[in-house]
Amino acid sequence: MATTQTKSFHNLIGGEWVDAASGETFESTSPADGETIGVFPRSGAEDVDRAVEAAKAAFEEWRLVPAPKRGEILFRLARILEREKPALTELMTHEMGKVRAEAGGDVQEAIDITYYMAGEGRRLFGQTTPSELPNKWNMSVRAPIGVVGAITPWNFPVAIPSWKLIPALVCGNTVVLKPAMDTPALAVRFVELAAEAGVPAGVVNLVHGGGGTVGERLVRHPDVRVISVTGSRETGVAVLRAGADTLKHVHLELGGKNAIIVMDDADLDLAVDGIVWSAFGTSGQRCTAASRVIVHEKVYDTLEKRLVDAAERLRLGPGWEEDTDVGPVINRAALEKIHSYTQIGKDEGAKLLTGGEVATEGDLARGFYYRPTIFGDVDPQMRIAQEEIFGPTTALIRVRDLDEAIRVANGISYGLSSSIFTRDVNAAFRAMRDLEAGITYVNAGTIGAEVHLPFGGTKDTGNGHREAGQAALDLFTEWKSIYVDYSGRLQRAQIDTAD
Image (cartoon, rainbow, N blue to C red; front, side, top):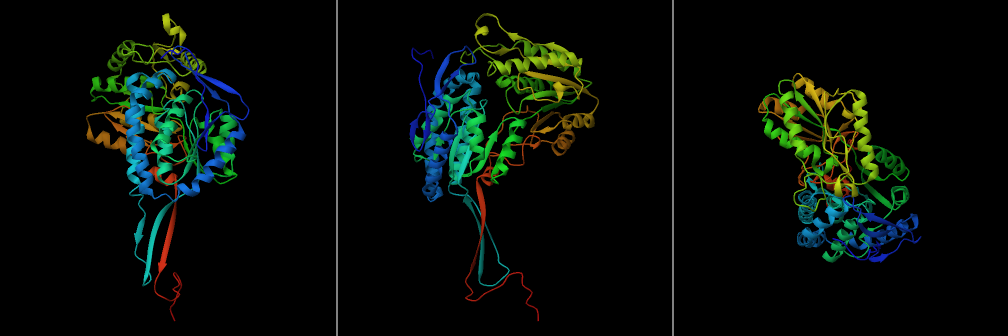
């Protein structure tokens, strides 16, 4: 993907590609080898204001487009995404660093949710109910809200924007998207394809820049009625506070400290496969990554050995190389944070079983690579068992029985994803009931959500909303209750008419 000239990219505002008002720029570079992907506008509040104004103006026409017609545009977008999947996959291996199979899965999620939500154009179901009064009709309908501000992370640079934009659009809203500064080229391509599909000018706007400028203004802008953010807990709390002054709808998808429970009757080969995929897939840079493995004492030693052997067989390298198992982490700051947790774990007395090193040999020195890391003999209250590391590190915790396993799994501030490996149907159902998480897997890892079910978590993982599935529609619509009285006289509900 080497180029002879660095390409410049722009914001998309009201259908026009424009520079930042300040003229300032920043570069996007590959975490795999330092390759420059492109130059992008470093935007500010003025750019956000222009984008919101364009979105607000476009809303007046877009909300009146019949929902089935909005759905037809999204069906076209889904087909275009299918056509462009190989190119988007290749770009993602360079700009974000995912291995090719995972990058293709990221794009496939966008395809899946676009097809799914396009179908909502002919549904968007409300309800009809009988009235308590004669000659009166009751029903509820979904109404679009207005301008949506979408602030998206770098770890799923196509899937997560699609999770926010596509349901917002089918419901009749318009959008201002602020992508992560680590993956701006993928955001540009995504909105280009939306325009190609027929999304009208101003309905989707794109503004590049930092969270402290672009994000802050988007959250505080009085004409932005909905904010949807995927990020850290600290970011989420700041967004919630900033959005309170204008009573915005605020959706927060935040962190996770997810656990896989392995019981003594588990299929250990299957469990090891699930743990490796969940802990080290995307270099551990998923909110659903398995950064804790809670193991029954009877199989702890066996699982530990098998897991270490499997981790040490993983090959680090650029995502575009077919034999790469684990790609780079996103940037130097992430690399340093991950490595700092290795030292924290050692200082706390955990046993470093493998990894714990920045990989610098050969071409790996050009990127940000961290060896898959496993700690053993971890106490559940250690920081490495409580805090989100967001890297290829997992902690093995020994327990005596299912009750203790569930207590340990729940003994954190987050509640996103959870998993149990067991052949005991009773244990599986107890875990399904008792694990405090928005997602529970049985005999599978903690990652791999499907778009037709709600995605999100409990406790510090968010503020109660969900993405994907039917639940996403509640974020991007207001309920309107409608009463039609055709009795020809004034009927007063809830009035005592007794003599």
